Length: 450
Image 1 (cartoon, rainbow, N blue to C red):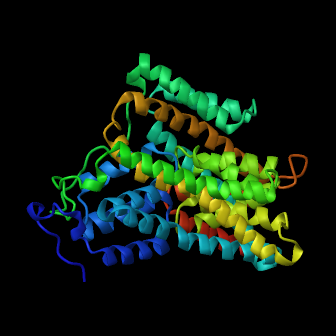
Image 2 (cartoon, helix red, strand yellow; image 1 turned 180 degrees about the vertical axis):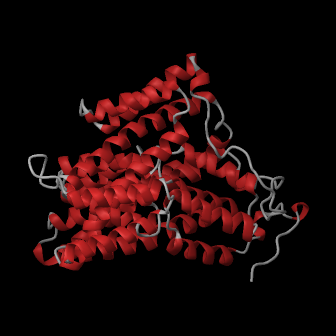
Image 3 (cartoon, one colour; image 1 turned 90 degrees about the horizontal axis):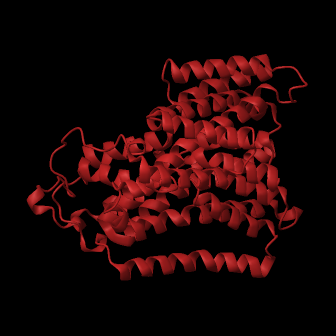
């Protein structure tokens, strides 16, 4: 049974929230956090703000606004932030890690099943139905991000330029993001009205009563900005990045698949402005085309696994790392499973390490400047560019699902019908992703078997 919240006058000590109660909650959240970032944030709001009253809505939204400014999975960073606010560094590590680990275990297990039994009619049929649903889901994600982000003509132009750059000119994803950031910085200097903060999470809408961490609860000492603390966190984070990177480089060589994974997912972690869908085109470009760790079809299947498991969608990187280690047979043909597990762990470590660094090092500093146009303008432009990039990803998925043998072959009419059905369920009937994936998988299995 949850303890009743203290009144605001008695809640200035955020340590009044029992650590073991928080630990149990973060453990539970890691296993039930379905629905992507929107569903995960809504779940945390319901539990932390409405039910447990551990944090007020104003403080919750304040933390969320900060996390949305950062690269990386905002829902996982929000859990890390609140854990840090309640129980210092240990709280951040517990909340952030437990948000990831259940998903990592599930992804590794499902990736092995996929590799071993992907050609079995039952499994193949499920994926035959899921792929059209994934295509519809990415189109729907493009629509939702565009609706939230493209508030004026300038932002629409930036999105169109990004789409042309990646779809027609075939420019690399990092270059597009850097160009968008530079353009945003310039526009922020001369036309700030076009790039003001458009976050929908700016103001609270309801008062749920007094909370442990209330609107007027003083900021705890560990959350105050200090240069010495910033230096320590950055230094320790640099060590946690450098040691495994140097160990891989010196023991295996720079060109070894594991070393390349570490470097590749480091870059991916710093380019995920806009959430998981924003970085998927970059992961696709590198993992499929450059390194050949997996095929285009396997990439679509991996997104389906990511959508149907708890945790952040960006955990698809663990799937990519697993298939990369497995397909390269890094440890020999007799240890392909272990090679895949190591690949998944490398991908996860170098993707999520920076999320913890950003929260532990940057929260006090960024919170004090998050509404300044000099900071938000480049990020607003990046978000607009991400819309164009994700549209390219949606078209890529559609091509491989509807013409699996290429344009020279016939259109897969059944896949088209399944795609249109999933699109209607998402856009018109507003079904959630899990329901759409389930009904599509069942229909795909029936079609494949009968």
